[in-house]
Image (cartoon, rainbow, N blue to C red; front, top):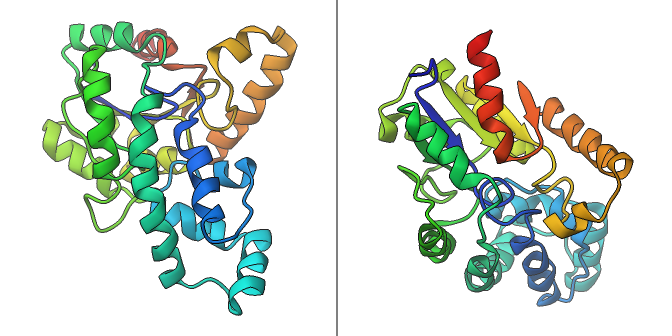
Length: 260
């Protein structure tokens, strides 16, 4: 047994989709539908948020806001966010499953957690309709968490705590200090912090680095460490208690925390 009762994982960049690539091009293409040029870097900025909130944040970026006002005569409103969101969701539904390969180490980590009698929960910034395409692909590879909380399941998404509260109910796991929240984004870490959980950031597999396994493998240790340090700062600034490279490193961290 362990002093931890559950671990709750994000999806893209944490358990699937190394580098968190699935949403990036879709955000750019969705804005293109409205004659707005958005960059991949702009799309990566709010990653981890509920997708409506993500689009709202992008709309408020100076470059995008200025383009919108020039084209449509006014600064983008929430109604405009709704329009982009309605285009984005079906586009992302189509591509998310194509990027649902498990991140190396996921199955070994799940076996480790199960061996300790821990529950495995999950939350995501994806909508339920998007995740319906991802779940069967993950299950076919052997990954089936005990629950799933999507961004549109509750009245408020990340970085608020409601998704984690729902996990506590679903998993019958408490207190928050006995739950690990594992995530690659600042909003996802914020979700765990807000709920009072122990938060673990993933530096190399996620959105902040945005590299494939192969791309990282072609880099030297010094280059990788620069990326690691940048991602670590983002996650620590969001409140992460611990930062590791990928989900494969979680068992060693848990062993360390228990030894302490």
